[in-house]
Image (cartoon, rainbow, N blue to C red; front, side):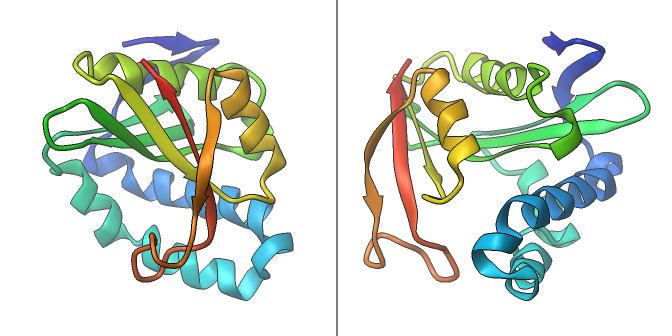
Length: 168
């Protein structure tokens, strides 16, 4: 378990899910309303961040779902899945409340995810091209742009994105 300021990084549990959902809804609206519009962001968060979708991640094999908690607030979350064979890691989510960004919470969440998969040789993620602050965060943490996820690469319901990665 690592920490960032007064926040400790720990594994998420079922009781954390309402706060995690609220964090995701707030963060998505703050970041993406100007990109997709508030109505579309509401649709995305209702689908991707529903209580059922979040709960399904808790028991997912070869995954890690962690939160940044100070005892009274959950300020960040991250979720990653290890690929077949364990060599490739896919960071599917890393979000920090807008008011708690730039405090080291995102860096601590990322470090915990990386430490949770010692067999992983690389980590990849997708990020919205217009999300300049997220891109700057990932670049500052050693990621480089690998390409673009075009329509042929995407699963149903996904959005266009840039692919970033780094060797572990």
